[in-house]
Amino acid sequence: MHEGLPVENAGSVPLCLFVEPYGEDFWLEPGEAVTVSAVSDGSNVQFAVTVAAELVSVWLFENGDPDRVVSESQVLDASGTPLECGHQRYDRRIPGPFLRRTVKPDESPDISV
Image 1 (cartoon, rainbow, N blue to C red):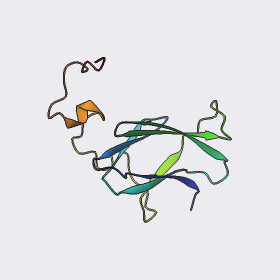
Image 2 (cartoon, helix red, strand yellow):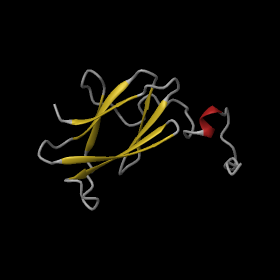
Image 3 (cartoon, rainbow, N blue to C red):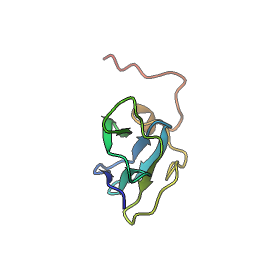
């Protein structure tokens, strides 16, 4: 098995995991855990993680070099089975304020308050 980055949704709402550079999305239910890893065993992969409300974005870099993006990655469930892009997406909306709306708004909400 490849070494990787464990990601667990310890929250109470679905969590969107984006794996870059292709923006693949994986939706984790509360309590669900996955591992993000490179497909190749030979590279020294380092991870860059960005976290926002209900969203985690992960980039993989060879030797931590931002010019050497690892493009072949996988997301594995707790049993080690690879998951497909769109895992549990259903008809979910963009994470954050949009997730709680029944219909995606025409424009972004005013968050300057």
